[in-house]
Amino acid sequence: MKILTTSTDAQSVSVIPREYPATVTLRLRNESTNEVTTYSSVATTSNKGYLSVSNAFSLEEGVFYEFSVLNGSNVIYKDKIFCTDQTIADYSVNNNEYVIENSYDNDYILL
Image 1 (spheres, helix red, strand yellow):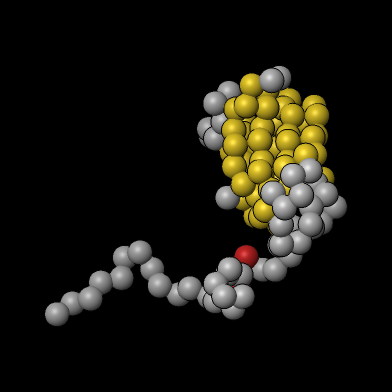
Image 2 (cartoon, rainbow, N blue to C red):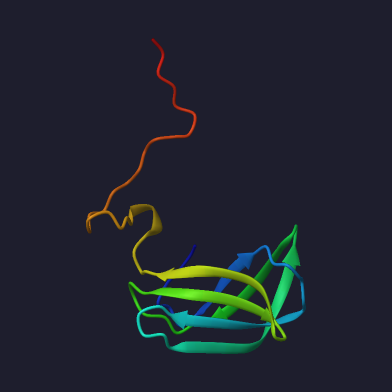
């Protein structure tokens, strides 16, 4: 899942697609209203196996979007986007509480 904000400035998204074209079409479907927004001829950059796109999106706070990257009519990547203006490290969708997780993958309990 990708996290973006409501900012009208260009935001960058990096993905690992099936193909690496120079331009793509981005399709966002609002999961609440089913409204589809399409951004055509978006320039891409490739670096170390990632394809990066930068675009000014029109997103609503607290909404999930289905995100598709297309090369012509072929879907080369699909994901979900969640739009929030809150700081990412402080946000949790856990009973509407804000929780900061401080545990680590390599914590051990010794007996």
